[in-house]
Image 1 (cartoon, rainbow, N blue to C red):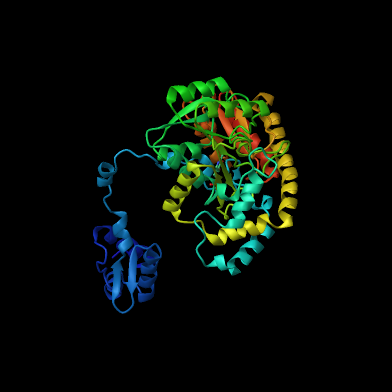
Image 2: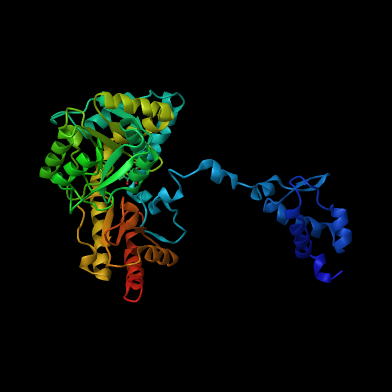
Length: 472
Ligand SMILES: Cc1ncc(COP(=O)(O)O)c(C=O)c1O
């Protein structure tokens, strides 16, 4: 027997070769046999066995022996039958936007969808969570529509008294985040096969939720700010859609904000067509040079359904949001939500309310406005310095993102991949287009990375974009 087969490595290799051909639970050669075969000490054998046990390949049962672990059998399982059984996918991994990708250690996260901890009211959240744990709803089930005081808070914060159509607490259904609220709204207010009109570009998660609800997505081009009223009227008429999903405030990804005139014209079209405007007010707390005034407060007749979320402003861990609606649409939304989830965790609702009713919340929002401004301006400065002013046609007045226009024929997928390899994560504009992207774009988020790293990140993008780099 060759000398090197007697060491830990030799014994390990022998066992590793045996394991794939044996069924789970099969007994492997005993320590005594391995000692004899490899002329090794029992300790050496134990070390080799332990290495395989650490990987989950084998199980040792003291006094009985060593066996092939059950996990190994699962690795060799045969799943190909599922392809036929499942048929075409309505939602698959490709539906999930790049913004949800994990950040490797040390990388610059300009792709992110959620702000870093330093931009959150961390102290308020932690103490509210601790207080919530001690409250009755720290254990009990919450009401199906949500905790009364939280519903009242969402109503007053979305369309306060004095609005043309103030929101009543009964108009509010508490949701486990904005994404669920969009899913519920699309499912509850439309039937599979129906059309839904969306601005182009728009939030990838809204498109994914609409597809999951079996809806047909019909894009309407968003100009510099809003779609033209005539275009919206035409697509609603041609498609028969009764739902129009839109982000009037600091849209993700463009950052655009509808003007007062655009709001009025588009709402008139929606009313005249007997349709719903699903207003995604995700950026309610992220005004920088302008404030958000939801359209819910301008529509007493139930054409507007407004979706709110606290996950980006209170904390991503506090998955609490709301949908506001009126009339039968509200009843349908409530029923859909209850069937889906029964109720939202009372613990999280009470914690959210604890943060929102603390005087420190308003102080935090004032501070946040300044912090967002300086991050936005620093990222914009670096974009212009490295890529030129034409890369940033529009500086958003709020929100969390810059929307970059890249040179024609840029290979966006290649740029995103090579940038990731260089430690800079960015999101391809293509994720936000409901149909073929008319031009190459990138979305850069200014709240997921340290501003001190913006210059380095833009340097990487600029070097990858140089002629002969990623232009076709
Ligand atoms: C435009 C928009 N709407 C809704 C959501 C949903 O967020 P959440 O489910 O965390 O509230 C997001 C998250 O990125 C978003 O960007």
